[in-house]
Length: 236
Ligand code: IPE
Ligand code: IPE
Ligand code: MG
Image 1 (cartoon, rainbow, N blue to C red):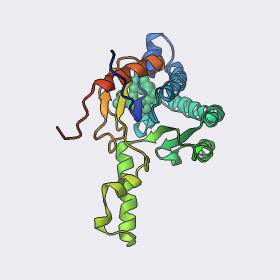
Image 2: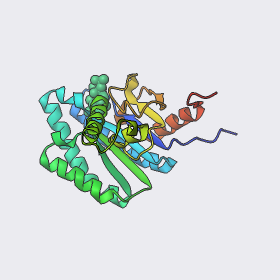
Image 3: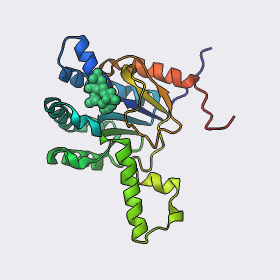
């Protein structure tokens, strides 16, 4: 009998390869991004179907601002459209939505749409979708450090209060369990700043397929691979 699937509680995906997907088809990179957004819908549905509780996706890094202006503008527009077009569906499906990252660099209407969707979905507990946008692992750790330094300076806490729990409560993922499985599509084997604090015991998986081709079958393959892993957490 085939081994039963071990379902990760939290899957995190570095959605990479939109540009290469488009290039291989002779299309502009932007078409890759639009198809990446469509793939995200399939991936959310597949994760829910398999019983995954949390999906975190990396949509835009703090370094991605360095891309050509036309591409950044296109992505900003795509994020705004995603937030406004998908909000009804996310609410209907009882999906809790969170942005991981510094919202302040987005334009006002996008920031408002992010906060509104977070507020509208904050009481859902079955499934959480975290979208990392203007996210960087270094900046997240520095943000937490700065906030803790302020609390120390004001006397709210003392240095012995700085525990893992306290530190984690200052991360964007506050209150959430760390990812069990981190997937990076497109074959690149690096994290590019993704969840640097949270990834300490995550299993890593690097499928070759570009994100716009990701679907339920690919999620199943990832879960099958995860099922084979022997997680030890330093023990024997
Ligand atoms: C990922 O695809 C999407 C973002 C980083 C916004 P890329 O745009 O990085 O695609 P490749 O890696 O160039 O193929
Ligand atoms: C990482 O991908 C960020 C996202 C997928 C959003 P990049 O394509 O920006 O990373 P590098 O430049 O290949 O490391
Ligand atoms: Mg890339």
